[in-house]
Length: 520
Image (cartoon, rainbow, N blue to C red; front, side, top):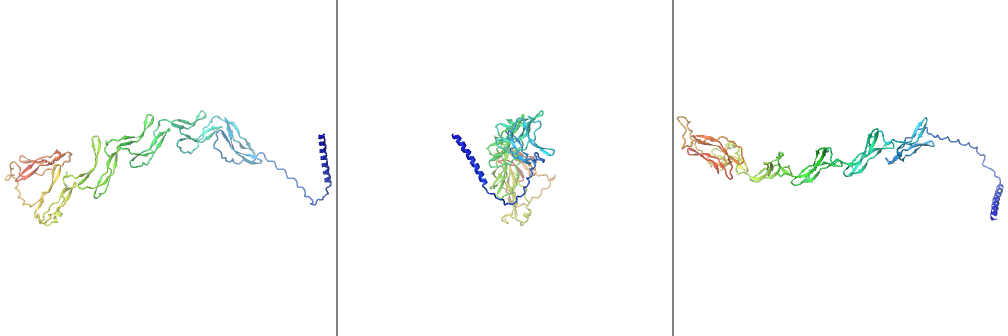
């Protein structure tokens, strides 16, 4: 009953609404249009021309795309131009997962007649191994990194084409070296041989490179150890030189490479004991040109034996010392080795071992003296280990020794040296008349008691070089069978604290007597 009533009420309501709308419309008054005549209706625009589905012009040049050099397991599908609604739209490239034994052929536009047609990219079957050699390796710039080895880049075969795999660093492995991979041709195919770590050879089979140029350094108490090549991780590595403290009585021996059989071995450097004495002579002394310095003497440089080698020690000035002379040091061969005798200051020898030089000419100096005044001739005096000339001179008192002459000063050989005998003032005597020449009527005077009455002839010259440990006993004339006969000199062995005095002839009265020489 309630459902029937609801349907009746809804129908009545709709009918009343429609009736009201008709009455309202019929009640509106009629109005006039005052806007004037309407403009003629324009014809509709022509329909748009149909868009060509294929382009008739070539696509633009491909865009440069920035991307990773490579993504392992993926293949880069390059971007391309698409023809959409009558214009070119760029479609960027993207990475596509690789497919086994497949290669990707990029899409491309081809001109066919007066139209351009897109040939879609596709996957195609790929050769499992290349049949052509790989391209030349790309140039790579890298720096050496301590503790790492650089593995060079190489080409890999992927999706039917060579793809460059950049190099990278690998951490070094002890006693290992990196062996680079390589492509090898086997038959009509190319096969990649993987690189890897392998044991490096213990010894090199080729000699080391040449030594590198180094500027040696110096520091007191140190020596320069030159650099050398070391065998490390299968290759020669240069170890720079260095300074190292000197070790007393030690000599440094450089290490060296030696060929033993088919390989080279390193003989390590070491410090060896140095011999106390050298067994070879020192080098010639270095040239030293030093000016004379008043009050000083120049001590010449010399070689010293230091740590198993001769080292030059430059000379220097030393202050002069009264009545002493500098004796230079010297190297002497003693047995099978050489020993150094250091230089020292020593007293001058009391007597010279060589005769004095010839007397100087004093005729001009003596001519300036007044007549009748005595004159003491000049002579050489032994002073400070050398002969010094002292000029002649008149007496201090001109009236003293007037009419006298000075005679008898001379150097006399005594044993292995010379001594000075001071002369004296004497009044000259009138010379005796010359004896008549000998002949039948004037025979020579007979000897007195078997001794000669005439002076011996002048002794002949005997020039003998010094002989260590010996002295020269001069020759002499002997009176034999009423005539002088020459007896040559001879060597006498030197005696400690004794001097040899040569024999001599002395005139005693009207005869000549020989005074024997001997050790005094």
